[in-house]
Amino acid sequence: MKSKGSLLIKLLIIQYLSSLFVAQNFDFFYFVQQWPGSYCDTSQGCCYPPTGKPASDFGIHGLWPNNNDGSYPSNCDPNNPFNQSEVSDLMSSLETNWPSLACPSSDGISFWTHEWDKHGTCSESVLDEHDYFQAALNLKSKTNLLQALASAGINPNGESYNLSDIINAINQSDGFTPSIECNDDESGNNQLYQVYMCVDTSGSNLIECSVSPTGANCANQITFPAF
Ligand code: 5GP
Ligand code: 5GP
Picture 1 (tube, helix red, strand yellow):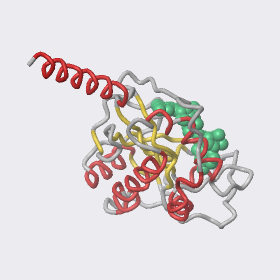
Picture 2: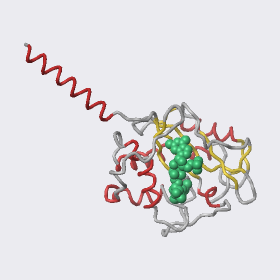
Picture 3: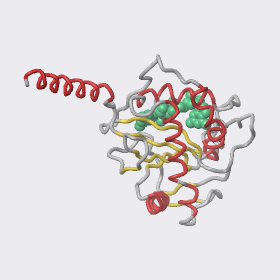
Picture 4: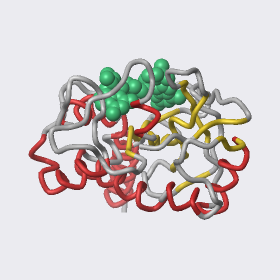
């Protein structure tokens, strides 16, 4: 009896220690998508990837582990750098949905490397590199921002829209409230730049945000430029 009891206790201790080992040290993810028109029309400009001009669609910026108090971990594991061979099956989907618009022109590898090394390594206990990029790609199709906005008559045509109409359109379609980050074009027009949505720690389910991102900074009326 005694040895069975102590075996049980040992098993419980091992189970507890392994749960500590995989416990994630963040509370949720921000899933951040960028509007290419607004990345490109600032004074800083942009460069298209070698494959050419990306589609006129939101692109993924990143999937960022975050804490409920607004802080966030970064660069969590230098021993697990981005490894292209782990996402070779996702490469064409990443090129389409997660293009890099920074200059000089880049095929995306440096952008994905930056995002994995800075943010992805901080959620590696729940999502390995392949799962991390797959989760972001799944979230992009799930949120379908361009369609959500079009359903409310909001289109990238250079017109000006109420910030609250943009937020409501995405909420109506996706069921959760986004945060919007704006930037200014070369003429100083405040415009829709990035959309932040919150995701649970599994990386699969949208949730309501418990804290607004520091980037949320728009005027009440913003433009949605063409791309
Ligand atoms: P962050 O640290 O802001 O998540 O990532 C931004 C970094 O990725 C910067 O070093 C930026 O130059 C690089 N980067 C490469 N391509 C893009 C892009 O298309 N959009 C943004 N926002 N950053 C990019
Ligand atoms: P910026 O200073 O351009 O807003 O952000 C630069 C970079 O800091 C972002 O690309 C991202 O890597 C990181 N960052 C900025 N704000 C947040 C945030 O609220 N949460 C997380 N996890 N990262 C952020």
